[in-house]
Image (cartoon, rainbow, N blue to C red):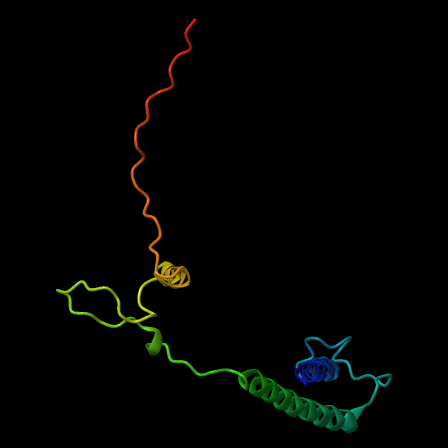
Length: 141
């Protein structure tokens, strides 16, 4: 349904651009020759203005309707969330306790918590300082 509506929307957009470009400019800045509107034009006089104005209005209304329909379809499956729900819980400045909310902490902390849960609560090994080793013995001759 959404793909069909997008195709219709694109057709309306192309038609709207074409109809707007066909209209005669009032200032004559883009007209061919001295203001355009010669006898060899597609339509002349008042009929051209009425038909193109009406077509522009119809295409603009269709453009707005398809835009609104696409927005409604895009929002249909979304779950509303609040930014406040994901904020970490505020703690007292004197008590540095571990974050109690699952969303508290950084992304790495959350990933470590999830990894610990899948491993049955085992703590990941902490990196320690490298222990010095004896240099290899020189070959004897």
